[in-house]
Length: 181
Image (cartoon, rainbow, N blue to C red; front, side, top):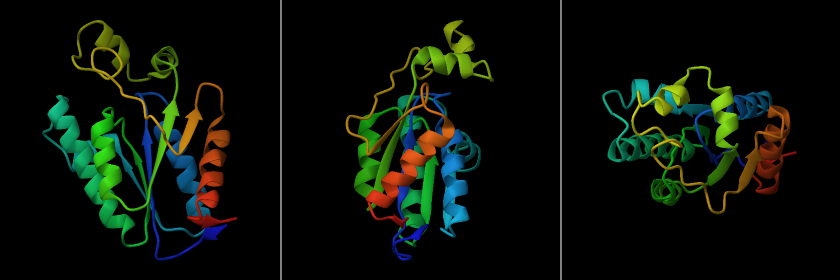
């Protein structure tokens, strides 16, 4: 498989609750693309927050700023032929729509998993802390997550393996002519 047009990158925008599998699938897709010689960068929400958005909190305004920063960097890379994979909760539809409007080739991927499954997967114990009131404004507990209305791809991470979800993404990229089989 190869990139259909070396001048045309795209942004794979993974969204979903904490623990939904965004980063895990993103890494699998990254490996597939790199194996095919496609230039790719991952902008992981935690890494970006540490390096590009340090000092921002978790208020709605700060979350929106963080997502806008991710979108801006993704746009710069994408317009230069790079495939960009973002893996950030990006809980609010309006800001995801802003990102889509900014980025020419935008593919929204919803990592869909029930809240209970995300809580079971939570190795950092963040959901338990949020339920105990130790963390305020936690997405899915006391702050909303607005699921995408019409994502290009939905990965049902409670019933699909990582490989099945990654294959679904790769197949859709072929269908959308971002890469060739």
